[in-house]
Image 1 (tube, rainbow, N blue to C red):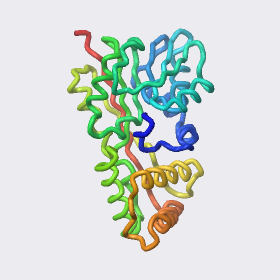
Image 2 (cartoon, one colour):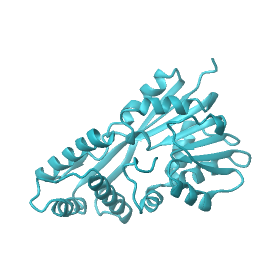
Image 3 (tube, rainbow, N blue to C red):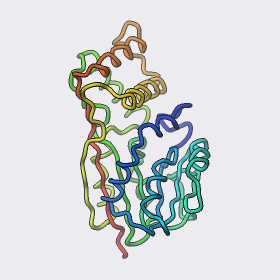
Image 4 (cartoon, helix red, strand yellow):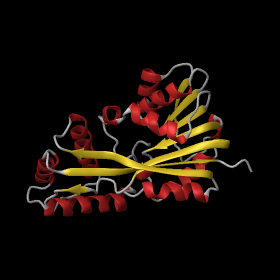
Length: 269
């Protein structure tokens, strides 16, 4: 993720990433994808380093982890919190050559491609260069992101869909990144490709603090960074956010987001 480009860049992003990252989910997903003890692992878009920490627990006692992120602030935080002998962090742009970092048995990229709609395949192609022949590339992203709600008032529903369309057009955001992952690996000739679909957000009943904070920050930061005007609301953003919070805190609403996990093995030839 890259400063001045990353849609969610703000002073509280490290906090949001830490709160929303569930180490048990990371563990389950990585095991399904084929991570093993002793592997050399690259965590692409490692953010605060919490995912690297979870992955590191799966490859010890002899495996190694590197985490890569475009934000020096997040890399410094990750290094302070999780850096140790077998875990190292690097501030790099994943669109540029990464081959000097080495070759890896298992490369993990989670919740990154949604921010690069136009260049997602080129990024995967570049990342593929650091996967060892016979190694695993695991791509994870959301699909129909932020668009699956029941109980939205008509005006709010119209605004949410309009906001997401504006994010696609102006900020290169991709609400449908998940459905493209299989095609990326297929086009690159990967073998033994497998796909798993589950729910990432599944929100019903009383709203817990983690979901309230995560969604509140997403709506606030994304909408304000693109300068969306909220013309549907007489009082603009403040009236919109009030109506959204009223909907989201209602225990009768239902919100979900599909998570698509795709893994493949790089051919030897």
